[in-house]
View (cartoon, rainbow, N blue to C red):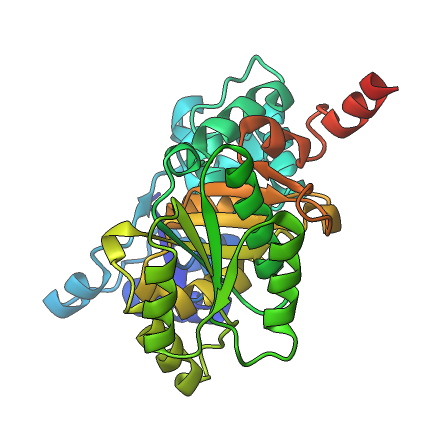
Length: 362
């Protein structure tokens, strides 16, 4: 008996497709509903896969060349009773029920930490069946999460902070400027946010407290003048206003300002809250895609239990993480990206680093 696999947008669509391909006598023996992964500009979509057969003595519908061309990608599933164990593991119908306990536990750990494809798929690839996944996955997560160590050590002359309003952009910039100042770099700050009430006063207060000079620039001429005044500095940190993809006027304004900078000497850094959903982070990235962000600053670790969504975003976009911030204190609450910080902010792996460190300090 020959078995067939058919996929449709819904169960009814799959059944109708099977009847169109093989005739009205087709019989359904199994059903599997799933969701496609989607992509940068693609939405996730639901699909239904059915396995069907024709009763003995029933002839399959004769297909025209057009039918064959249309359905040539449809897979044929062999008789389940004739499959070997290895073949069943590679057959979609049996994959779920044959999944090992180790793999099931690994999937739950990743789901609990909001780690999604394609990172989760890579983490589960060739997972050892004889080891506890909670001891295997942490090392893989650290290795697969891109961290911007090169930019930490050798920052560019201009470091532009981009990100939505409320993401902690300004405070993170001040913390980073102080971090490099303490490392012996000559730092300065320029703010382009002349629209938000109190924005300049806020960054100026940070600059005064940290002994870092601050200038504001409302147009291209003022920005060019400010960069010339600070030309002897090692690093110039530039704060920007938060923009929305729908605010075309403000987007154009920001772009005209940033065009003044030498792109080869500029690191555009995207600032995102650790609690932001991955889908929302992708939308924010689309607002700043024209600048090609080179680094990611993850803020507000203290407001979430896990950072799997941010790690998934970083892996998916290939934008390495450079800083993490975990509070409002300036300049204290900032840390350079590292495997230690990543593991401290994941849960259910049996690596309660926060609790362990607090016990050591006592």
